[in-house]
Length: 99
Image 1 (cartoon, helix red, strand yellow):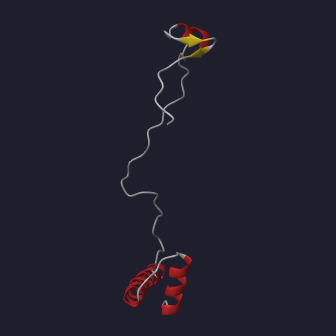
Image 2 (spheres, helix red, strand yellow):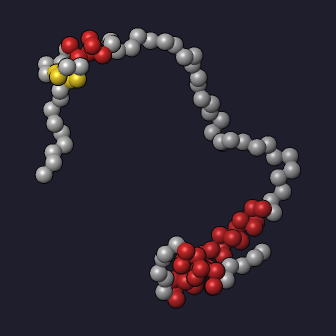
Image 3 (spheres, helix red, strand yellow):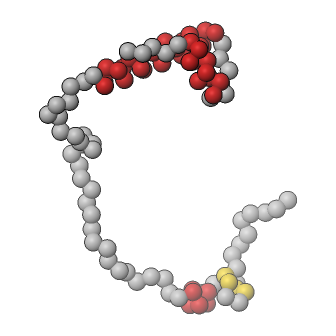
């Protein structure tokens, strides 16, 4: 197993633009070392005969056929129902104000 060095942690902090104290550097070195050790352990796991799964719940998505449905009326008919309009555009109350 490759262990992460303090200089590598400093480089990661620099690339991430994170300022770390010496205590934080050592704590993160320890944490990253634990994470890398766990990844190494997972990589050594024997998976012969294990079926791959996409999820463990056993649920499946229910699909349905696409069906055409009636859509909104053509835009001219929609504009006709608006109380205020300008030509072919509907006028609605302003919600954004410029100061």
